[in-house]
Length: 281
Image 1 (cartoon, rainbow, N blue to C red):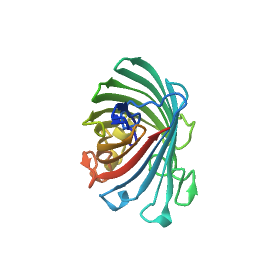
Image 2 (image 1 turned 120 degrees about the horizontal axis):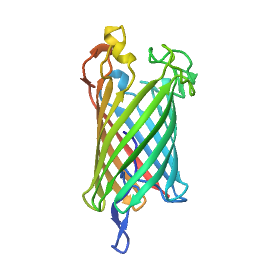
Image 3 (image 1 turned 135 degrees about the horizontal axis):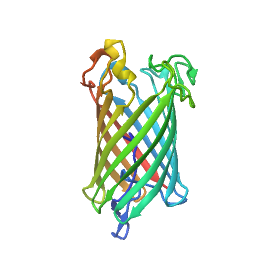
């Protein structure tokens, strides 16, 4: 699921006490209008195991090329347990095109390319490591669709995203030790508007690994029949005015990826939490 989604169906009071639609309040089907920029900044961390507790600062900055087409660049940095070991994490470029805009029904085609990490362990674009070792920089291509129904006080949306990642941008090899990983992410996101100022958001996503090497791995600790990850998130947003909001969120994961929990599902210790600020201008 998109960990920093945007926008709007809410309404906020204007100076004349009339109601005006808020354009960026966290709605899962947000798309900026032509000529409009938007920014969503987030600060997040985790309450669980030590290796999850890094503080992360994230930014998504986008532009509406037309009323139907938008592009965005997003990135994050984190402190790697201490600010002496900070890393530049993901750098992602994505595009959305609205193929259906029929009243309350909306649908978008989505494409993205991401690099992660850009800089870690004092090394840019890490070359060391392989997919099997889980180290090195990963390059991910994404293609998918999102869509749903936007009512006056609620929105329900779904998405399906196909991802391919490898340790090189254009490595399509199927040889052992070189092949990439194919995943499919399926999710549902919703928003409920309590009043002109407040809205609640909730979402759940399952990302499954489509490759057979996880099922056939000779290492018992890495042999996983249905490798995947469930992620759930809950958020509360407050509209400052018609173009700005602040929000808080929590999330939790349940994984099925082998390792110490072998071929069993395991809920991660603790939970993620954070705050965000969004603006459309």
